[in-house]
Length: 141
Image 1: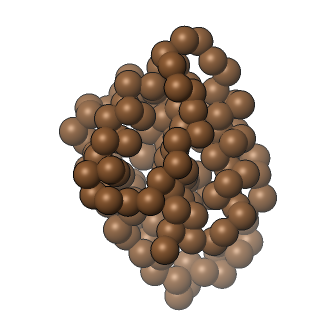
Image 2 (image 1 turned 90 degrees about the vertical axis):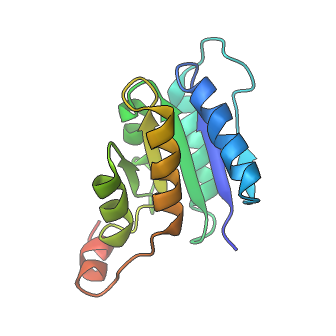
C-alpha cells in the first residue's frame, strides 16, 4: 500500500489543508510534513522533506503545494529517483503518471482552482505507469 506525503509553503497552506480533508475522506494513508501554520516559510525546506520520504519506497507518493508549483517542483527534482510533475490540467496530470512514472505532484495554489486540485490529485493517485516504451526513457533520467 502506498503512503502519501504532503507538504506546502505558506502560499499553498490552505490548499494543502483542503487536500488533507479529501485524503481523509477517501481513507488514504498520508502524512503531513508541514508546515502546521500559514506563516512565511521557505518552500525548499518542505520540498526536501517530501522528496526524502518518497524516495525511500517506490510505492510512496508526494504532494507539494506552493503558490506556483514551480519552486517545489525544482527542489523535488534535485533528488535522485524523484520525478516531480507540475500539473495544470487533467491531461498533464494523467500523462505524468502514464509516461513519466511521476512520484510527486506539484500544484500551484495561485494558478488552479480548489476543485481542479482535488481532481488532479485523484487522477495522479489512480493512474498507473504504462511502462513499455516509456520504461527505457524513465531509466535514462
